[in-house]
Image (cartoon, rainbow, N blue to C red):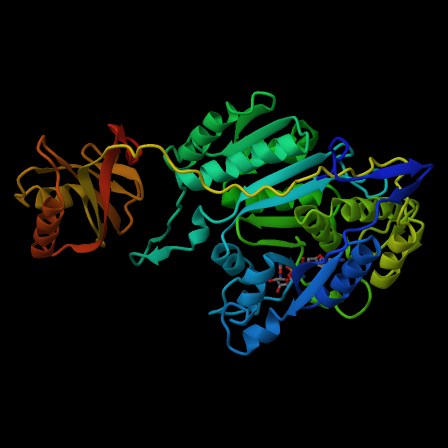
Length: 504
Ligand code: NAD
């Protein structure tokens, strides 16, 4: 959250490069801490030392997560009792963990985020030119990623021998909340523009919903510029000219991929931290993993986790300590005191280990960088946005059904001929598609036919009810079709709520 105006919270006076700070808060904020696996314990020690010396007032509750818990047979890597700590403190500082290879293990991160409703992932990515090599010296962006929806529901089915599906779910309340979060973040942190990336030229209904919601909410923030990019060209622009962006808001999958790209092109993924924000509990971490090959050697760079901890301090209203630690860290980087991952002969001055790096930051507490932009944290950056009640729901009308079948060596004309004999009054076969491409009527002979067919029945004027669906399924059963699933076709206030097949 740097790049802000003077914080109302930060009551500093600067004398030369020394800073006098108002006394830290007297009450300690309880937080839950997990030291994780691999390099986790080393970087957590370093991080906690730095922020404590910077004046953070924390009461630590330690929990165990990761490899040891997975190995005790808990498939999501966290002990049931640890949830109590998280619900009590509502703040989680988490070191990286090692996810065991092989089946059956669930991602701890996804479990924690989804269970505790952490809907926003926030990742600031700023370059440190010329002290850390980067092709993008003026980059200073924040990626706000939706954290719960999209394909991360992990709802997947193998439906036929040849075809598997993953459900992409985008909700209106979920989109509203993350987009509002991005604009509120921009407002509080004095950012100038919010950009939205989607692929709504292809996914007109799911990504289209996200994009439409973005355009609606943007109207409430006239002082902040807004723009939308199709994600492919937006990603190319981000990788090439990141200085063109400020805050970028994205659905989950694009955000997952592009926030790593953004962190990498600042110079190193090892430097970035992230916040996962929810109404009830928030989690702060480095974006990198547990780097097992570097573990226990006092080599790892603690900067990523430190940045996660800085976001945490702002979140709990200890922005003064965050600003002090961040500026000392910037000065350390500027002084060329670098861990191996960012050490570069000619630029760096001293190659240090994890502990020595933390000592160097602590020794600079109270100093500010001379040429890098000093960090200044906004007051009250804690943005929890409860979902607002929706307006009147639209009128939903069922207008048909897609019946998906598994048929090897199928032929669309043959399938259509059989289905046209179903004889269900008020339900008419209108189109057959194969993996989303229309193959009947008037299919193209060059289209490849997999064993996965979608057969659309629509009403012919009268109300299309669930009784029509049942009768169609009975007819399909009698005709020997292997039905995989059905999808209802609905309109909402008369607007079509389903896609047409390619070529339809
Ligand atoms: P990784 O991020 O651990 O390592 C990638 C590379 O970056 C390695 O060369 C590593 O040595 C280096 N590196 C990472 N962090 C560094 C640091 N702080 N200082 C110096 N060098 C650093 O990714 P990986 O090797 O793909 O994954 C290792 C394990 O971490 C896996 O079990 C993976 O599942 C897990 N992981 C956990 C998280 C998390 O807990 N949030 C995130 C990503 C990966």
